[in-house]
Length: 386
Ligand code: NAD
Ligand code: MG
Image (cartoon, rainbow, N blue to C red; front, top):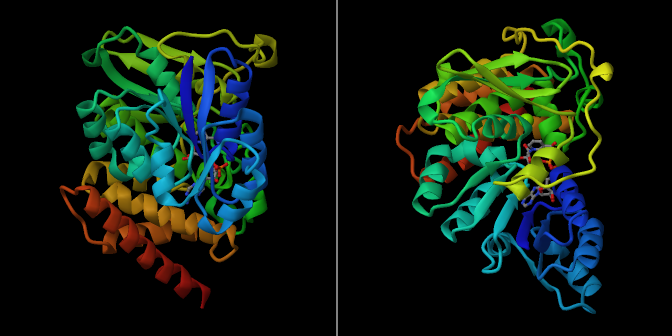
């Protein structure tokens, strides 16, 4: 029996993780769940899975959750400290980080320092502070098992392989809802259009990131840290059917890919079962439904975010942290109709030029960079509003 804490249980990844666990009550037990605003879902998850601890990170909602669970033995807590407690419960064997954005950094670090293995969905943690997080994981002997589908694919392809055998990796990108469109078209797109992903149903932030190709940019940075690669060893290839989840090319020229239907339950299930595999009743791939799998180059002129992410990766230091924070602000602003689709990249680029660069940041530097970038990006967004 594996005891699992789920940070961000009310989100897209969190709910799918609970459905995986619900299908295997003999193998997995949920011991903590956390949510931010969707208290009714958090409460119903608590009543179904009976974890030891429920954390509502928005403290103003504490009394509502507490009252609803008062007839149970479940402990209810609120706030950021409590989120960190959920990440390091003594009984936990594995922590699934399914919070969105930089809010995932502190609880992830807490879990690693407590020696908990991590099923990592919250890619922003590695984009912000990948060197620090991976160093801590090594120091505490913690496994970081990727949940992001591309990284799970690479991780699966690397089972039994030596690091020195990797020549390069290819991360596949669906291209999102605006694949093939030009900048004129993108200038006028609405959030409703951007939120319609062709292959995946996900939370709002990652869906906008997928439409702007920032998601792939963040994933390039995530891959660098997870697999210890240089920027030149990571390539992005558009594959709009989302069946080949990513590939590794080895030094002898041989390639391995991992394939499957686009269903996040698969990489979640793998991260729980790792290092083994457990049978599932997920729908199986049918070749006749996909007689053609196609591949094409990413349009980096139209979708500038990909190059911005590569630039941050090459620059190192706190530059990716700047990109991440600026991106969180602009995605939020786009979702509130405050800025246009193309302006998102403009604000990110300005932040990269203006926010103080720190070559060798520590945790405090990362947290300060996140805060300063947000303030600066907000100012730029507000200017655009005027
Ligand atoms: P989501 O918006 O659906 O859910 C986010 C979860 O985080 C919710 O439980 C929410 O309550 C919680 N949360 C939000 N803000 C918080 C805060 N400030 N403090 C504490 N908790 C907070 O997001 P998602 O689509 O499930 O994505 C979660 C993470 O997984 C993201 O980092 C995303 O990039 C990554 N990911 C998601 C998918 C996917 O298919 N959804 C695929 C790959 C990677
Ligand atoms: Mg992905």
